[in-house]
Image (cartoon, rainbow, N blue to C red; front, side, top):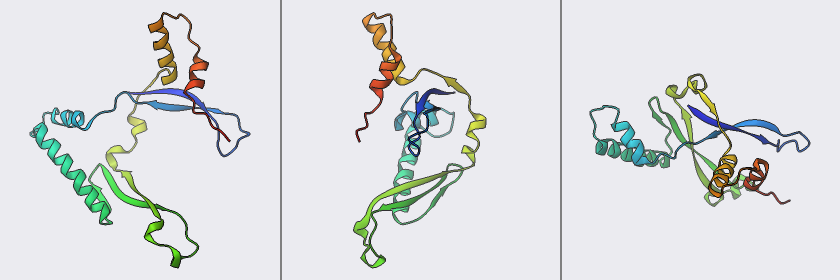
Length: 161
């Protein structure tokens, strides 16, 4: 089940447009590599937790190696990995050098196991993180009223022109 909250967002391309409500996925847990390994090993497979951890660690190392060699890597049903580059522009191709390259990004295209996740998902509307934090704070301090709007405003980053 996917927890989500709803928040209003402004259209950055049209400053005159009214904000609209959008869904925001709420992450339940940041699963560590160790927890993920234990989860995989717990599926009654023939491989121990150590074997699963070793295979995944080696796979990550090899994936990085192959990406740095300029290869696109297809990992079965998981999907494809390759790199893209971000660079600053140069006045001409002749004046462009590797020093213009600022970042190497990893691109991932999901495989067939990830197709139609929307059709497989169920959704659960929950309060925003700001509202949850404000409610918890009120419960701890014995307050009986929670100002949700103030909590939302406090959670928003301030943008200075």
